Image (cartoon, rainbow, N blue to C red; front, side, top):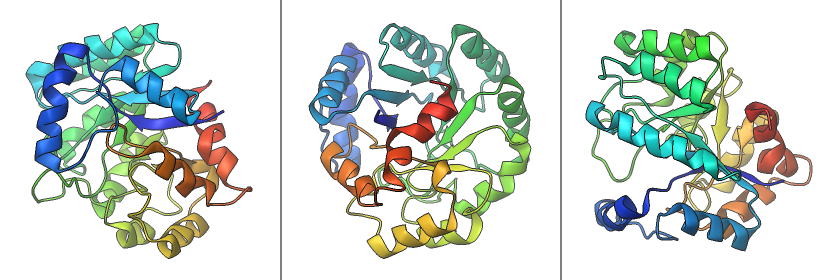
Length: 261
């Protein structure tokens, strides 16, 4: 079973606006039209059985609508929606409880888009609520090439925030911190955290990938693409290159255990 732990899609109406805007902002090319149907078709083409769909509330006003779309994705048995809350929303903790009751397994937080530092003590009560509910927290980690500095979720800052989760599952996208992999090795490898591999093919030097794999439990590494922004073929080849001992678990077994599938 192949599980992509990091994808994005939108409703048809929003996708028609969002994809061109994001392409222009980031300079990246989308590999499908941004809709759930487009995502499922691309998954079929590349032999991906299931996918986590990460949604992001970029401001407090968006929170409810973003999560209504996430809940609607539960109708697709191969899509595993993650909701989102905005740390600036006064009802963020209440919204997390609503998502848990609706059957969602996790949330996505993007400290750059949401403009908070991951180790800001003002966000710690939210982390404790996530831990209480047993939700998986997926962070964008490291540089976001579509946004200016500063980086709000560096490996060092994320390491300082981890104790607030009390052992509840935390996933750092992009192998722990996009374009900050030396810092990942120093601050996060060996810690109680998962990494996903999204958007790392052709970007993370193979020698550095081997160092990270040697320094972190392979059971805590999850295959991801960051669709629609990466070529699934490249991302799959990248993980299969880790070898027959590590690749099967990373491609799906580790995510299945984490998500209780």
